[in-house]
Length: 117
Image (cartoon, rainbow, N blue to C red; front, side, top):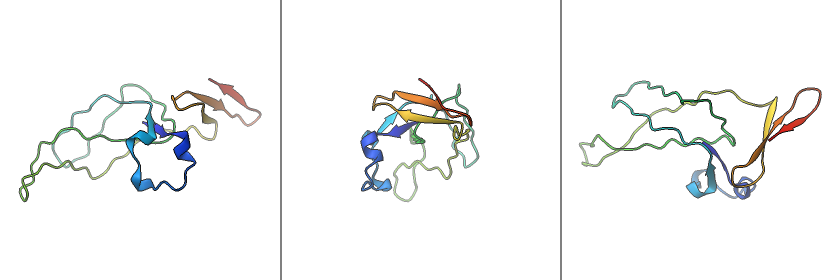
């Protein structure tokens, strides 16, 4: 999970289909989860709660075990991905302080503002 670099966030000329991995700062990497080689729902739970700052999640598929009959090549296929969590907004907001991943968590109660680092 991670966020785009600050310079990329304001660049409206970048097409969402041309994102490169070096345009992101990945702030959390989960452990690898083994998958069964079947077309069925598979749920994976992270070992601890994670704060996803920036709203980006990358699913990396590792290993190829099934060969396509028609061309003899290996393919990796998934049909759906869903991430389940809770939004911080409207009571909290995040301000990115620099490209190293430092950030400030802002608590925004109805009666005032406080900032936690």
